[in-house]
Length: 120
Image 1 (tube, helix red, strand yellow):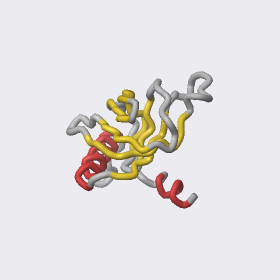
Image 2: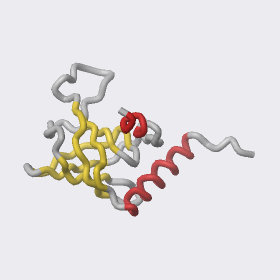
Image 3: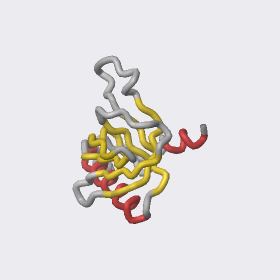
Image 4: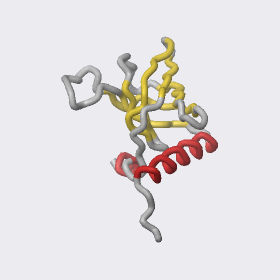
């Protein structure tokens, strides 16, 4: 439980970027809806297997990053209607420092554009 609380403390970005999940059965494509340095929620019409570790490619505008993620949850089976978004949540289980830095920079840069500093 402490781990899930810790994850919520990371800055979150709600940009829409392409995501490709490489599974044993092929590729599943979607787009991000919520992204942090520890995980991603993305919209994807294809149901993936919960608990499975997969390579996840995230198409950041600066440079795509690749992480290993584990499908933590999916709302595809229980999805009823708007305003919820059908999708899945992946926790990153392996991410190289350079990719983490790219994610942090992308999130920080876009967060600053939306919420300019109040410093004088």
